[in-house]
Length: 268
Image 1 (cartoon, rainbow, N blue to C red):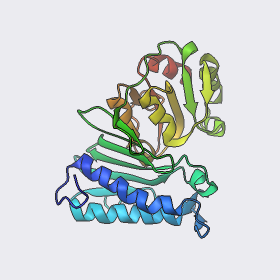
Image 2: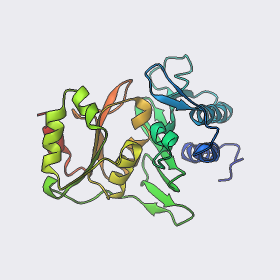
Image 3: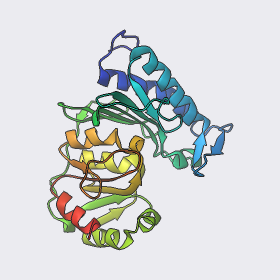
Image 4: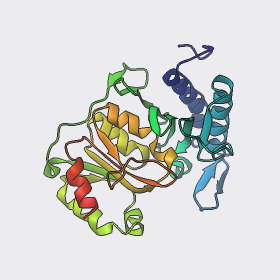
């Protein structure tokens, strides 16, 4: 649908929000005048993070005035969600450390939660010229540049000895008290690489990687990823098997075939 469609459906609106984000973030990538400050937790935030989230919030307020917004930079609109509330979950730039250092693995994550369930997910990585999206009840899709839309499908790898795993910083696993368990999982896998952030999970959805895991995340880190992985045929939970979400959470995404064994090792 065109960007000026007066009543876009939820997935179409999420894709339009990603277009808005890309138009702001990509020109700021590598910009000489990029402004970067430290948040209270000492993680970086750039002027692009703030501008992207502000623009997305403005569009949602126009098109979905009754929906809530939860974003990494501006919080939850000061309104606690009630049961059944529709919430747009926004990470304006996932991978800000990459963004400010000139590494192209960063993207905007947009999800719609209806109650506690993510029903729409969009990940847009303009510096990679890639985008992934999914909605409940339909397949996950991806597109590279102006190429054709392709359906995402997880791998059919059934043994850890044949599996490729992508992960985050080892220090995070040590801080979570799971370094030994995480090491045991790595030792069982065929190939281990730290692609990091959203990209690990999109590679699972595409079948290029079989397992992705992180021990501590926020809702905006995972909400958009879950529907893409699951609609591609995979499984996405917290590392203890519970639903992944909430204020602080973890993530284990697999092709489904490897999930129970990976989860057992991470909780061993």
